[in-house]
Length: 245
Ligand SMILES: O=c1ccn([C@@H]2O[C@H](COP(=O)(O)O)[C@@H](O)[C@H]2O)c(=O)[nH]1
Image (tube, rainbow, N blue to C red):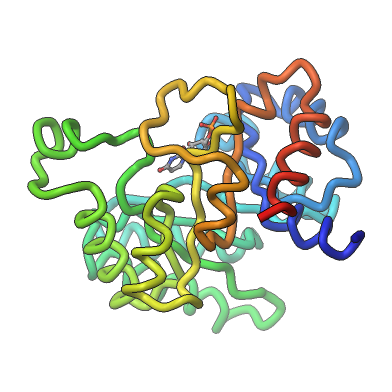
């Protein structure tokens, strides 16, 4: 049972979307002992920076740095080099940046690993279509024809061609991605909403149990935990649901 619990908890990524390190530390203290992944996004990173990532690593957490790099290839290569040296366990780039940009990110990872033997290789993934994007937005605002799943699949295939390890997508697309790219191609899925919780700005959602049943590797959960009056209980309930799948 303890093994199953640890396995499930290790596939839960808690999104530390806070405006200050202090607020993030309060949640981390509340979740102490739960062996989950911690996800640092732009809000926290822009204020707390690399030192906060180092603090999480010193506490023993696996860290997903969700900065979604998107720039010209040379710049992304430099960014990827820096993030690999920082020691994050996972980071991402936008697949819409294209094949060369994603390949450059991988080159950045490899150049850092070549120059410092103590570094570990981070998992590098591509963002397909944001889980807040719906069909109408995709076609009318973003200007991509076809349905969301087709776009997600074509970005997943491009990400794999660039040599990356997996993608960020909605749990609704996991089976199609695994079917196209293989089961070892990693899926990281935000857009997770336990029964009865508000979707907010998310469009393509499933519950934790449903997402796990789709075969996803990691689920990302922010507000259902961070805005709960009892964050630890919310996280424990999500892990219980994950274990049911
Ligand atoms: O397509 C994407 C990519 C990243 N995210 C991030 O995941 C969390 C989700 O937070 P919730 O509060 O559970 O909605 C957040 O940090 C996003 O930046 C995403 O939602 N969708």
